[in-house]
Image (cartoon, rainbow, N blue to C red):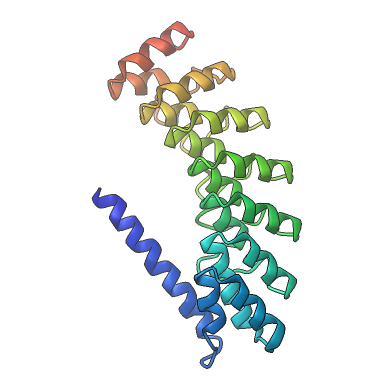
Amino acid sequence: MIRFFKKEFITGIMFLLTFLAFDAWSGDVDDELITAADKGNFSLVNNILENQKIDPKELNTAFLAAVNKGNSAIVERFLQAGADVNLRVYDGLSPLMRASRDGRDQVVEILLRAGADVNAVSEEDGTALMLAAEKDRKKVITLLLDAQADVNAKRADGMTALMLAAQEGHQQTIQILVNAKAEVDYQLENGATALMLAVQHGNLRVVYSLIAANANLNLKAGNGMTALMLASRYQHREITELLKKAGAR
């Protein structure tokens, strides 16, 4: 519970900093459009865009507010007005990354149609697909894969979408990624695999799915540990039995 509130607090602070970062570009930006976008007032947004000359910085700030709120109609209207579909601010996340992370599938569709870079990379968070996989956004994942997202792209720390889903225990997302030809036996620098991450975190159903996807059960991490050894160390009895039945040593 403490972790949850801490994460929500940090998310709020980061969103505030996003606005401050934009505001630093122009000290006299009128916030009427931003407020309208944040509150989902399409009529007011449309009226302002049609009758006022909007500074590009204000336009993009309001656009980002609409993306974060998941208001697809307002997002589309801002794009029609010239908002930057591949906008980046201090945290390195593009609008597509934000919408994918938050499961805003309609916004994701609109951004992709407008030319959003599906394989854009944030150094810490990776790609839109990775963000969606980590949060189990199944519909978004399908949209991104249909738009040619790289299923085997790697984050700065080496993690892939499959590994993030395995670590978090998202079985259906695992199946979607495997069907899209995700590298099941890819190993991090320390030798860890998606299967090892699933085992370590006690994600039985994910382990089952990876076995069904023909994951190599006997690969070794840099320290010599196998998936079966990890299951034993963390006392995951059901996973241990499942691995043994599947031929793990």
